[in-house]
Length: 169
Image (cartoon, rainbow, N blue to C red; front, side, top):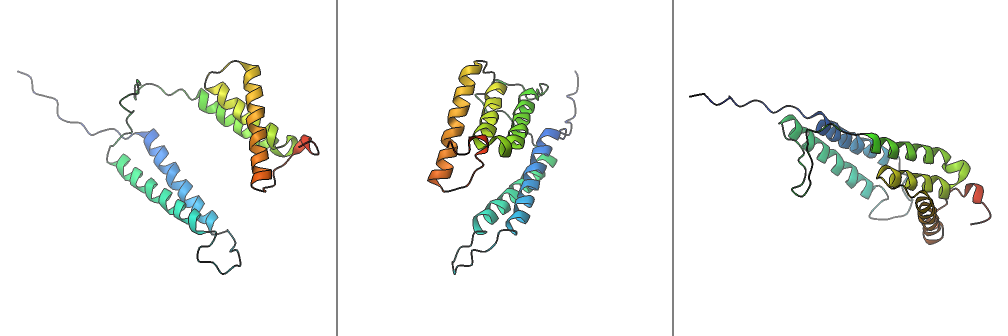
């Protein structure tokens, strides 16, 4: 009769630790960024810093809790309805395409304008998720970016860079 194998320590999940550290770092950075928000100068009970402060403290606490869980050996598990293998190798191509589209779109935001820079970001997300109808992707990306521009500039009164469409929109 064979003896059962002794229980082994759960391996530290580096991806889970990276997410936990990233959430913690985001909370800390947001906290320090919140300190740079100027007071409105009005005699108000709630200053412009209150809600960003709540979010930054919440993110930091969540990150610390996640770090403790990961160090205890907990791992993120896929939902029951997901048909995935948590031990399968990670394919970072889609994330790289989205990140690349975001960085290029952000770089082009000022010279080309919000509509074209944001449309490039939307286009990259659709491409990363496997859409290959380029004409449709281009049309929808431009349309959603234009509607977003109009809502933010006319609806909320924000100033966004018009870029090469200055005078047309």
